Image 1 (cartoon, one colour):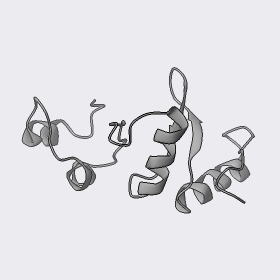
Image 2 (tube, rainbow, N blue to C red):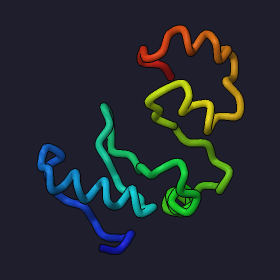
Image 3 (cartoon, rainbow, N blue to C red):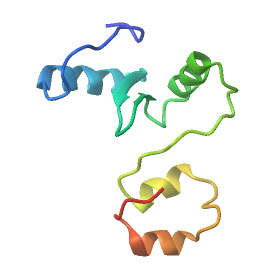
Length: 99
C-alpha cells in the first residue's frame, strides 16, 4: 500500500486499525477523527511524514503540531521547552489530561 492510499472503514474494525498502524509504522500520514474534527496524524519520529503534513496543509516546515504522548518521558524525548509550566509540575499531574 502506498503512503498516499486512503484508509476507509470504521475505526472499530480491527482490519482498519491494522492498516492505520501499518501506515504509521511505515512513516505514512493518516487522517483520524478527534473529539471535534478530523486531523492529520503521523509518528513524531518520521520527519518525512511531518514534512508531508506541512506540505498538505501548505504550512511552513517549522510549524508546530500537537504531540500526543503516553508518558512524561516520551515528552522529554521530543519537547525542547515546557513553556510556562515546569516539567516537575507536569510530572506530578501525569497522566491527567494535559495540554
